[in-house]
Image (cartoon, rainbow, N blue to C red; front, side, top):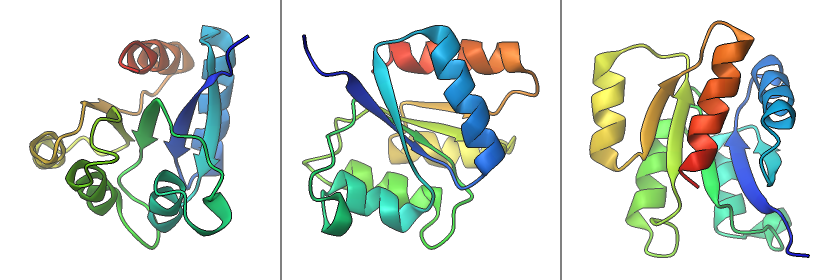
Length: 134
């Protein structure tokens, strides 16, 4: 049996991550959800540095924009400029509804830009959509 592909959730909000966990269980996709809570740890995980030296390469990154230490824009830019990482689908999953944020993320190479839904059914739909991109 093949190991499950990893989805890296870069999310600093415990409540938002909990909802993501429940949505992933409901969607029943063959993915293992892993979390880091700031941009610095996201880059260390992706580059397999420090405490993340044995981290699996994710099949998908769900990236919040408003993060401590290194913000989501900087993480996205670093991913897309790195030849080792740029092919990992990176979906922005944020509360920002700003068209300027969407435009900037898409210009930086985001696979998609999803505004965090207000209700759980829409979160499940967003997770299904994201998983289809992995």
